Image 1 (cartoon, helix red, strand yellow):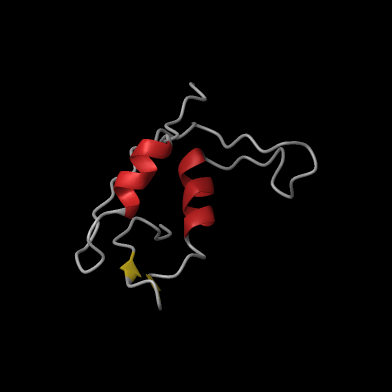
Image 2 (spheres, rainbow, N blue to C red):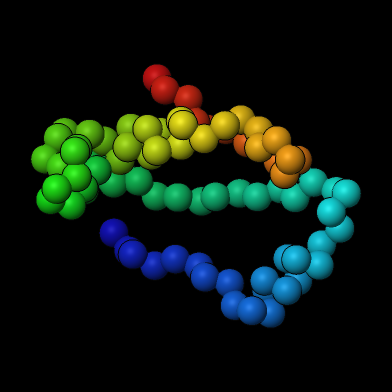
Length: 81
């Protein structure tokens, strides 16, 4: 599995900040999950047989569906199965 990620530079950040604030921004997160979560030693879930999908959903579940004051809303996938 790759540890690669995208880190926008200053120019991209300035473009983002300049977008109209009265229109929605649609974001798509393309993620790849491990078969088994890999927590570091000392983490409460280290060594447990937790799938990458379950770990991702456990991380996302506490975030609210909306962020009052920001005008933001999450459309998914944070739901437990």
